[in-house]
Image (cartoon, rainbow over all chains, first blue to last red):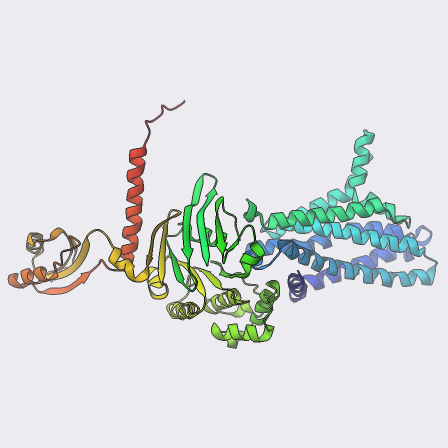
Length: 236
Length: 330
């Protein structure tokens, strides 16, 4: 697991991906943060920032997950991993942790930095703020697992990225669609699946166990499916 | 060391390998020989745990590759047909990665340096793999297979695509590895197995059609012996003279070179050596023999004859088994 983790971290920074990711993330997130808080005047609200930042993941998450497995399939290095690594789930978790490190480090660092101007210009609610940070981290974690799963389905990085974008968009917008649906039953299902409505449970500063469990199980499920997809030739 | 029992792999309705069984003993160097698509790679992929079999088992040192993959994999180093290299890594980083991946317990730096010395890539250890030549990359692939000192090393077409000089180097390397490892290698180049292997398994259309020690292989050749001779003399007369020699079963003109020289293919029964009678017959007629060569005895012919024989057998079986044709439903 750690061998794969180390290799993926190296590979992020020997290629440009890691730097491009950091550049895009810090640039756009700083801009969105200023727009929604310091410059928003009376409408200032940190939860607006955290909701909007989820939409940034449509671009940034596929960028860091698309190659994780599909490149192995393309270069046939999956053969090395499958025939040498003691456990395949360890390989997938190593990759997941690498992507999560890149994503989490940038998000946590940025959130800590952005907290400083908030305390300078006002009195932020720390519970709300950090519950939101946790929610976004969980959300990103689930997106990364889904990205890895889609990457393990194809040799083509471009298709992997496209597929991930589509799924992230659906999971974010599905809650908004639900308001156009007549049936209460379907509406409940859709808003429970929706990542943005799951996030809003945290935005009030509450640790919502249901949503916590939801994000963790989505991540676990897709990592498990990635393992099965990665070694599909072993059971097909 | 390796025990394969009734191994079968089906892709849809097609058998990639069909009920293969064989054993490889400790320290043996075994060549897996067969035309492209015969099932060599499939067999190797199953033994190394990359793909599963439809039925049958593969055991490595007593560990079943499906039931106890972790232990079984520890015994194997595998170089697939396309070396699985990370091009953006240096050789040292790559081997270090495999070392960590396999969770080896030897001293890391010493172990990697030792492997690099064995495969002669010490001078490239700090270079990026993407900047290395094909021959070097192949060596790095072999080095990767050797990490962790596995008892068995499996090479899938290790000399494919290399230049003659590199081929000789890799062959010598494999021969050397064979001294303290059990080696399986696959190839469709016949002279390769002859120079490297103790034993040859010939595989055709998913079945093992021959399994023999290398030194016995040539003796096993069946069918007629073929002699190619070049004679300076009138073609039709030479032909009729050759046909009259006792023991000769078939003669044909292979080539006419225009300056009176023609080459002939002379087939004789297996136990008859017709070289001397041919010489005397030609000498008597005053037609100088320019060259005379046995075509049989050559490993290429053995291979072709074994594979052909197998195909013929199958064709014959199919004919006898053929059921009455059902009327077309239209």
